[in-house]
Image 1 (tube, rainbow, N blue to C red):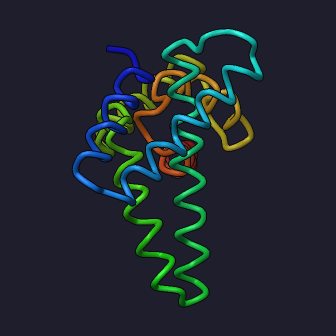
Image 2: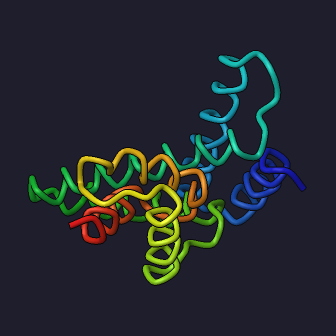
Length: 147
């Protein structure tokens, strides 16, 4: 079952169960995926769907951070709930240890030895962890291992 079929199925289930927040969030995800497909003019590949989902997660994490900083716990709670629903469609996340191993491997493959070569390492790591690890975590680990 591809992602759109799964979303449609979950929309129906959320309607039956009268889960308003879940229904709204799934519809937003579906709309984002459909908009991306329209923009590209073709069906999305799994990788492109993953990119859209990653963007949705990042937007919500950014919003959550801003709401918490502003002391808006009511809005922060709503975003936390949405984030849980979006993450249901993301692949299993890698542990910090697994990401560390990938970073070490990329550093040895690229021969990087200083922070000036961080871009080389990041461009080698990111395709391997796409959708499976947060970019800020990868960035932090690469900086640690290059210093």
